[in-house]
Image (cartoon, rainbow over all chains, first blue to last red; front, side, top):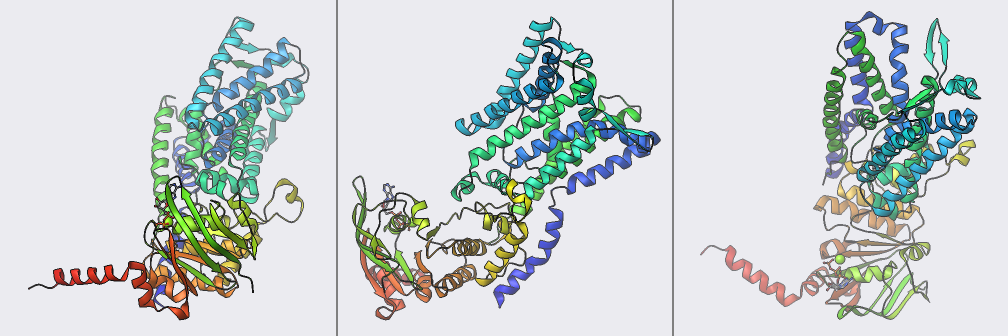
Length: 344
Length: 263
Ligand SMILES: Nc1ncnc2c1ncn2[C@@H]1O[C@H](COP(=O)(O)OP(=O)(O)OP(=O)(O)O)[C@@H](O)[C@H]1O
Ligand SMILES: [Mg+2]
């Protein structure tokens, strides 16, 4: 029948299209290009030591990028995620050094603070229906002020330090901020956390009911509600997930450096978003991949360290950041056109 | 046999606007009741009463022979009355199988069930089977719904309603935005649903879409029923002219002919 031939004509480009619209595609191509480029510039970069070196910034950035990717697939942004890593670190170090808390207990307190911030972000977004960009810009500024104000009031300086001497430090450091030696090269434990978070996020997103709901609330919230998806709960949970990731990263960094600056994490929020976008997340929600975001973080780890290995000025990193964002967004827009194209 | 749905002289007013008055209709198992009428005739108002969005101001509404008063669409759905609206409630970027099960995902077997795991293999298989059973040939249930044609999307929505236990399917102008071929596709699935024993309420402007699948035809004009006809009682031409108001159509034809013919 004519109807059937009409449909078959679309079947073949459909298969090619499916391959092209893997959300991770852009980040995989980008990672290969960036790796090849810096490998050509510097032999250290492609050595095992070099890899261990650039996987380190990739891992902490990656944990955040994966959580932000989930949130963006759910149709929201979080600008307070970067500064929240600083808040969690400050809470941890302050309680452990000035109040004499055990490091583990201080970390739990940091987690409680983070989840509360995430809950408030989420509640404000679903209740007020304001764009999350604005709501979290508000919490971003408030946290920035709190971090500085409280730190200064307590210490008279803009940092808290001395975590090394707190009770429970060695155990916590081994779990979150230690290294494992593989073939003579030390790799940060954070890399394992990053891999675990990516795997967990991927499983939740693709293999659970909650994951299906995340795609749905980001794709079309009205339609999702109409079939009984608890959209508000899903969004609040996503903000709390992002906050939980900020706590993990903030704790890792605090344990590693044993001190936290009051302005820690500021400016990182955009890098998380950019890594997620490079990994295939659409700014409009409903589409993306945690694996893509993790690879987006690898690109940034490579660029961050590669620029140093190549002996260039670190200022070029910002240029690189902007160029990657533009390229990734343009590529994503094409993808969306393909995927959402409506035939009649 | 008691009809699945029946309305007796139902009416609905919005403030001073009488949207519907004294409309009686029936929907049988395995039967298609077409509701026809011009713009503003009250078609959508009638199906909103059937699907539980509005409660009628007068008259009675019976499901399986017993009078009901639905407070929400959910209550109607629980009685097996599913409505597929023009805007479908589907998510364009999500795959066909994810859309099919959205909100009613089959839980995983095994330990991940407790963690909210979702049986992806079963979902894909059931979606594919269920679509095939309706005669819908979608090669790839992994493709995003946004890449389907309007008719295919309409069909997936129908298949989903059938799978989740609908006994009555209400379709509000499912063919109005579609071309001839795609409308044919949807009409075929309406016939499929009917053959599986569902009662179908099919709203349309177009008598050419209604006539081939319909068993009964309810004509609405300015909120009032012009009568419910069985297929044996009315021919296609009669239906068309009743719908358009026969005299008006003759006049229109006459007018068009004069302007068309160069002198
Ligand atoms: N919520 C409402 N409030 C006030 N008036 C309404 C409301 N809903 C419908 N009406 C009126 O009731 C009348 C019937 O409307 P209805 O939507 O049922 O028509 P319809 O047959 O579905 O038309 P169409 O073919 O254009 O979809 C119209 O005059 C409309 O303005
Ligand atoms: Mg209508």
